[in-house]
Every structure is written in structure tokens, then in C-alpha cells.
Length: 94
Image 1 (cartoon, rainbow, N blue to C red):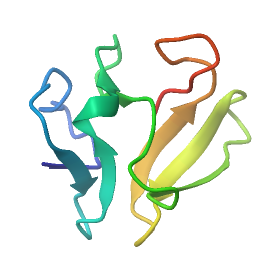
Image 2: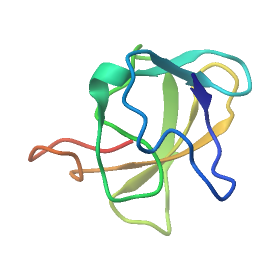
Image 3: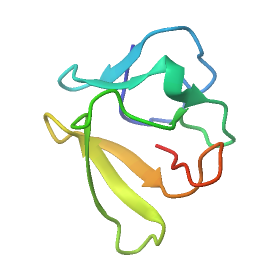
């Protein structure tokens, strides 16, 4: 499976088959289906990455409580990590 961008119809939002979500640009492993959960946003939601370096994060100055997230290997933009917005208290949502 591969995703990274939203172009008006995210096909993996309601996709819960076992597998690995990889960067659409370079193929680096980002998220496992085991960390995916249903969320009201139009994008797939995950609680954790596969590898410690799967993603790079930087502060999003105009969005408190959010970090800008990109592929840890090639820098392709992935969206945001929303702090304390996961399925359990204290968890973040990618």
C-alpha cells in the first residue's frame, strides 16, 4: 500500500486490510495497519510509525498542537501529527 497525498478522495481512509503503508515517492515504510484506527478525518489515522526514523517532524507555527510530518527518508510531505488527538488519552494522531 502507498499513500502520502490527498487529492480529493483518500482511498485508504476506510481500508483496514493487514499491511504496511509506505511513502508514495520513495517506498519507505511509514505505518503498519496494526496502528491504524477509524477517525472522522478524510485521511487515514495512525498512532505510531513503523521505525523511529519513518517520519521527520517539525513545528507547525500556525497550528498549535500540530507538527508538520514528512517522510524520514526522502522528505515527501505526509501531513501532520496532531498531539493528544489519538484514540487514547495522551496519544497523537498521524
